[in-house]
Length: 387
Picture 1 (cartoon, rainbow, N blue to C red):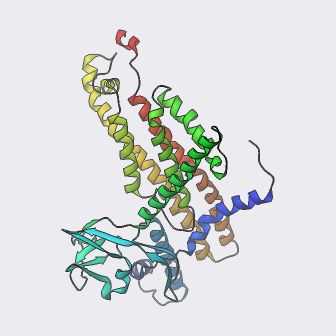
Picture 2 (picture 1 turned 60 degrees about the horizontal axis):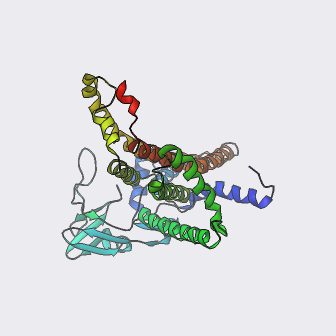
Picture 3 (picture 1 turned 120 degrees about the vertical axis):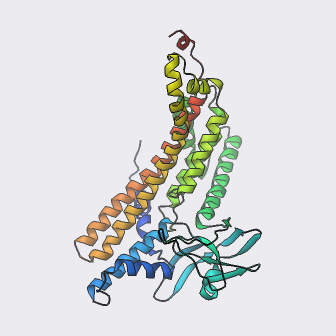
């Protein structure tokens, strides 16, 4: 590996590492959420008592901003100035199915009186408690459960283009554009890519030679290569988007990682050969009584594998965002010449680490997926029958 000494390369690397630090500019634009958090953080009897109240406000703002960053939303805000009441971004379309199709802009929640939007004779409100849309009456009243505090109103099927969905679409378009150009470059230049897209060739070759072939085998790897390449770059691009000041956390969303794990689960089991199922329900070379005992355990493992894929990706990305933004928030709490630089330095180091994690988690998900595909296509070993 050759490391270039050009200063421009070092500057680009530093800017990439600083991207998560800049995301603190994305202030939360939900006034109800911020107010609720302030009341929860400020200790009783200290309201309006100078420094204690100011510290409580800062902590509540940090907590509100972190929640706004890691959770999905129905609009996209680049940055906001709560003091001036200005928000810079754009609304996203709300699409609901509640007996019939309802479509309107998410901006209507902010412009309508009491935040209640009327559509085809039904009223909807966006809850600042969990960011979901509920059906309500004209007054916008939400009935909350006494134990959990969550609204009990009817929750229509939400098919909206949220912030996460928007970046999934952007990532899909980006991947289609980049790899279409890479494929055309291969065809035009005799298998040697040219231009900017050639920077992806080493990753494509790495996935083929170091992940697909060793784990699936020369005979079957080609039919899985398109999925392995898609899943690797899809996760990688979304992880990198999450490190920018855009404030997206797609792969730190449990529903997204669940969907990816379900795809791997379905492909693994729908393309598996008879030997795969034979090793689950009637393991060769094992006493008959033990086969009966082990079969339920092996069957349970079929579902545990995608579950581990889902949790591993979600937990690592979600925790990384929480830790970095919490450390950045400490700079505003300490307000000292010792604490703030230390927090900044630690956040900078963790930001560099998160870039590594972005690649590592894409690699791990792809590697484990290839392992599952390999086990589903493993050929029968004749010597096992004679044990």
